Length: 253
Figure 1 (spheres, rainbow, N blue to C red):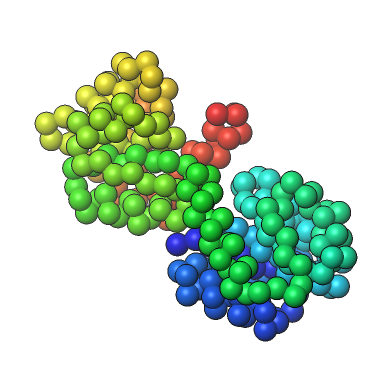
Figure 2: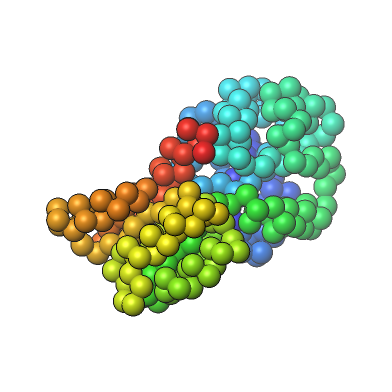
């Protein structure tokens, strides 16, 4: 499900109609005003920002600056609607290269919604980090996919052999690898990944159900990029994955 942030200072018929249309297309809508205090309370992962500009909103330079910085930091596309002068004023704070599309009033709600849906379908998956999840448990695969698929593109493999086959022709941004698998376990799969030049530098984080000191030491001596306990709350697992990519972004990886 894609999450769209609608930014508006007034609830209009057009805004409500667009929201209803997008929700019918299985989009999640988050509404906010354009002041920094309201914007700072948005904690959800956002896939697209839609700005309803008007005379009041274009005065909120700090809020527009906040949106600009958020779009840059999190690589979020911005769509904006308004009359010609309002959109011009928005672009004084948010550079035109950050605005994927402008809709000049009067707008056709269905055309705008279709444009948003088309953009997210075409570019949303391309912009998402790709994570290969490897686990012999179908339930665990389904759980991890459900926890992460809103923000990441998730590929599932139920064995080490399937993972290696996938990696031979694809390059994910991260592998979440079950440490305790039958036949070919996580230790062996990591060894195969590290031994192949073409994907030896793909980061690998182990998934393990054992949190005692000895088990953790056994996992970490293999020098993975981290480990996650399967017993962690879903929100903590999601945050750990988010933090991993944030750290890599800081170091330019």
